[in-house]
Length: 352
Image (cartoon, rainbow, N blue to C red; front, side, top):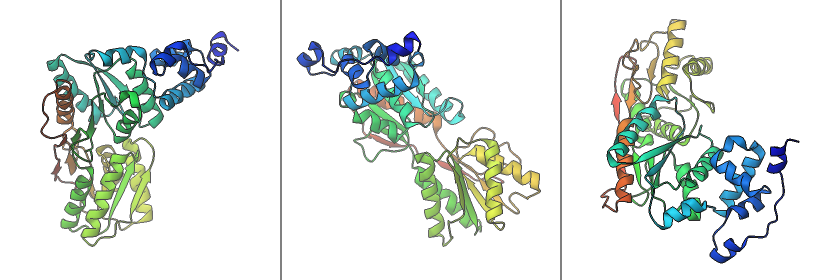
């Protein structure tokens, strides 16, 4: 066993130190005792997690979550003055959707004199919890979060509930939860109604990743078809990251299951492009034989042949307005609407 591995697995007495008894605040020693590692290993996991063995990291972050620990550095800052750093969590740093949102965040925070830390979660809840715990060590002034799950994680920690946060992309339940985005459900519904109005009677839905936003689009799409008297049963769902090639694969599955399918709603434009390529390989006329609709209006959607009908989402504005809402919270300014719906637009093009 290496010296570092031995240190990571070294048991520590669970007896709290004098500091935690005196202040009532959970200390790094308490976390170390709960996780069965040394205090130095906990500190290393927060500052440079790559240097700590995976099993030890998992125990440490579970202990942090269980005990509601906030590092002393963050606690001291929260008790006095906020830092000028904002924690930002997004699922992917390669997806153009989130890159445009980060551009909006960057532009507003630069004007306001703030910097930001970017964390890539990979749609994994344990990674979200780990990043939030790590960022708390840097005493962030607030958080910009890309999912309701991240918001729930932040709110579940007693010591971090006072930190201002704004949810992006999806909308909160009311003005008490600060959020900026649009209704994913209504967007899916709009696509269904468009296809029904164009006369398509056997549409399918294909999706990957299956994060909550995707599933809300599905919910809206199904409701729109049902309201038009159309059976929404034809769908293929795959819980893997989306790619263009996957769009081709999923379309093949749909046509194997339902050869007479006459339209397909893809949960994003990557899948829509893959479906279009597959139609071209098989000699399937679009939209003559099969209509295709996507989601997000990525830059190439209008340039495809045929151009792809899709939902235009306000990605840059979501980032800019979310950052603005957060900074206004930090400045104690009045915010008329804590739930800011920026809406969406259906771009009807040649593919439907």
